[in-house]
Image (cartoon, rainbow, N blue to C red; front, side, top):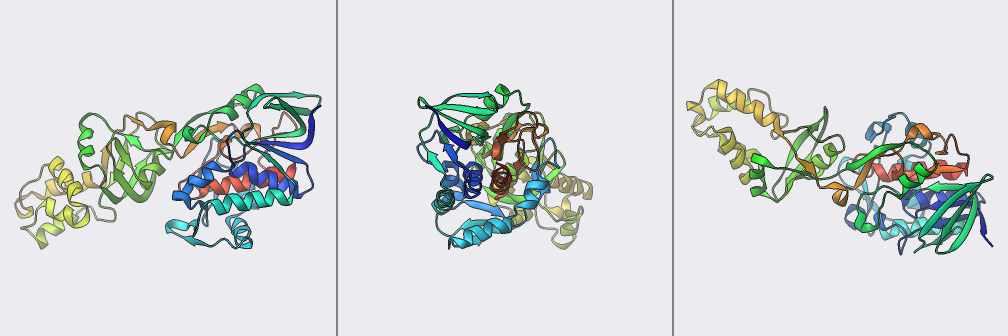
Length: 391
């Protein structure tokens, strides 16, 4: 005999728990099935274990999607301020870091506990270690088999995320389900991921561990944050941000001296003619990075003995230093996924499939991807609420 529910949510991550809590508190009988041994595993590792749970500046402009307008409705109806009110109501202390990023003072476990408490308020049943082996749809109801048990419901919510961080149990199951129901999928690719260097650029691996504030650009999208050189290539917040816009074959350009005018080296030549390019770069950048940039530019004379033309060319190169990544570190190191279930298939108001009544997709499973810094959590909360209000 099958257990009957109003809604079954697949996945006990940020979006799934938020959706289940909202639906449960509206009187719906909700079952959450999570294949991991505990809920919220990605929440627990986020923000260095302190959960960067939202960004106070979150707006549709901070998201990538084949349809950049899709996220507007949900984000407008459930804002960062709404989530902060929920956090405050549980007495969870938080602080703002840079660029509007909010973190728990204590532990990410507080956010998971809060979501589970919200689910409990609505009588939501959460089952972990639930391996879903079949999903069927017939006569307006969904039947889900997990661990040999069948549960049925009028509504099914796909909240199983994307394939990023497979060591946490992430898979492409959401896309398998989407294809089963003939929903289009925008090709998934790793996002917020370190980039790898090869060829002559391997030289930069020698300064692994060195970071500096830069402006990084890929496909005309720029971010002013830190870049970090690694033993494999490039990382750090600025690089993770542009990686979402980078495609194989594209270059990434880095401004190592942001805010400097084009003639700054010529001006410094007049002020301090005995200075060298290396010494000037050491004023602005870590020594090892300054040395490698000066070496590659190839100006070894004092500025007073260097033609203005050469200094102007050096300034241009420092402001638009081109790297040609030969790849990324893939889904294993990606924080999120670009792509996913096509927004063309879903209602932007409810997250419900336009063709299959009762089927919903939310969170990272959908082709909406936020920047680094709490934006993806805000999408999880907002899309979860949108579906939870509609179930």
